[in-house]
Length: 412
Image (cartoon, rainbow, N blue to C red; front, side, top):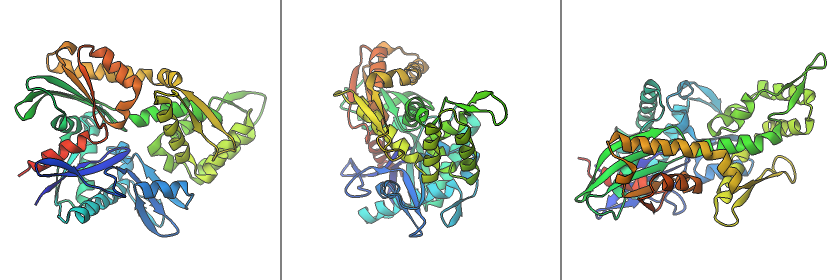
């Protein structure tokens, strides 16, 4: 039976097979070959929806639980803790398995084939800690098997992208720079005949969700009270509001767990003590109306707009929280907020080359993969690091799954 190549991403997922010797990406919904890695548990309808339908359910304000960026939770104790989700008690492993089962069902329905084997992409490192990295890989394996796959194999995502990179002349050395939602991965390779030889691979836990979190903390959370003062319940003293809640509210995968009675009561108490009560009133609204993901999407849209060549600025539109509420975001502001991530990504690219006992001057081409690789400051950082290399910007969203489809077609 054929194997199905699957790029299970933090933000988006895709699947592909080989047809006529070339990768074929399977339309997973509405003719689109990428599916948002999003799940919505619809309380009223007692059903689970996925992808764009899940995002639409959230934005429509339907009652339920929205989850995204679940790949970031792999390897943590949260994956196997049962919690109430809608009308069911589920683990996050169950949630990921349902998403993968839906992807499998759609792929089989479109192709008319049965897929018992999954060739899945994976980051070079889920986590810096080896034990947690191994647990994350085990979690994802369990998710695939619970989704109905009898066998699952893994291929590093940048190595998959190297298989689909081209055209690159034989003998040249290339570097895959794969910046995804949760990780940044790198593979140094040499083109040999009709294939590639991997010379080194490396990865760091930095991705688009980290960019979103940093921008939210810098520009959205202060509007909700982050960094402001609370009065003491007794006496004249004041102290800064605790940061942990705001940091969680700015983190995609932690948002669904903030809508508890205890947290809402704590925030209501803080609002009464706030030196700037209007800001805390917004936070109360966010928790009562469960608008955390709406804020995250607004930050993401502002990031994309600020990254555009023209006009080079965007806005974080928070009108759902309060009429007319918005925060200006320029490309220069975004660059200042994210420069440390760009430098760390540049350092990781350098480390990949060093692993192969090479230098930046040996790299002939840098291939950008992953939606977050499109950020101008990331591309500028890599251009500066590899001044002699060509910068190859293909379809950043399909490079990994194209390679996985090719590799899946070669499995016995």
